[in-house]
Image 1 (cartoon, one colour):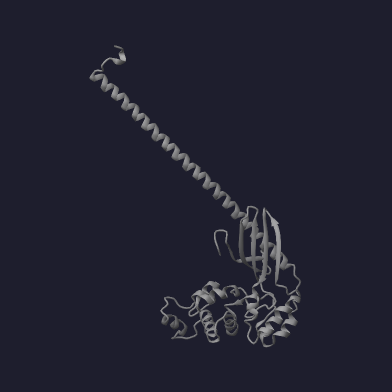
Image 2 (image 1 turned 180 degrees about the vertical axis):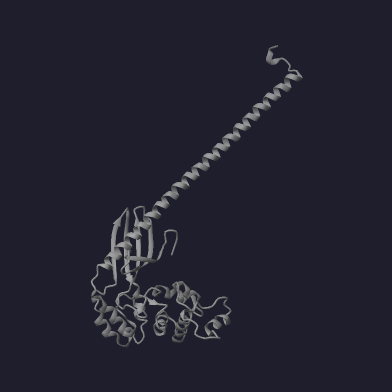
Amino acid sequence: MTPAQQPVGPGAARKQRGEFAERGFIIVAVLWILMALAALASAFALYASNSAVAARLSSDRLQADALISAGLELTALRLFDRSDDDPRSVGELQFQMGGGDVALRFRSEGARIDLNAAPKELLAGLFTTLGAKSDDAALYADRVIGWRKPNEGTTQNKELDAYKDAGLKYGPRQSPFQNVAELRFVLGIPPAFVEKAMPFVTIYNGLPQIDAIAAPPEVIESLPHIDPDIAKAVLDSRAAADPKSILSLLGQAKDNVSFEPRKATRVNLTISFKGGRRVAAEAVILFIDRDTEPYRILAWRDDFDGTF
């Protein structure tokens, strides 16, 4: 009988079982260590991947901001280069820089109706142009003025009472609009008309009148005492950028038009990167006389992280 065939005594069996158990424990421990290492490697790979994505996004963000800033600088240069008798307040530019193609359009804020300065007839004209009935448009205009106008009463605040009667938990600001988005909180204006009005209103025009050379057709048609034929004639004639010829067409509506240069300009940019990504941005810049900086940024938004 060979040694392997010899019977094993109780002591030897226990020793053998102990060795097997010890080996099994070691195997299990090794497996746990391998699993832990695999999880660690997976986590590191995910971290490295996320870090690479974050770094790339951060780089794109910096590049987009730099290109937007460059566009604003070029716009400022173009506008500062105008002569005093040059009324043009709109323009376009294109340039390439840092792996991106930039196309931009700039337009004076005089092209928009100022929520803080425009008279009732101009505000009502805008809502009428956007599809509101005449009586409703007049009511919306009254509410806009009521939002911005300080309370003149000593005891009764009729505008505030109107908001309370409507069950609203807030009242009118009764001071200038701080943002055009406040139009959404003005009593009685349907949300659909608010959204329609947004592209045509501002708080940066600075004057009650509009700039008829820069204004879009909807704003021209909002002028009081003007019919569609006159509005079309104004749009057709302004290619020559001659204020006198435009004023001669406007008749009574000329009281709501001013060609005085505005200090604020809106810039819309589209940036196309080589990888195919596109970023849209919009900024409003204010030109400042006799300052260390030629202009300041009043507003800036872009869709790098999502839609406007």
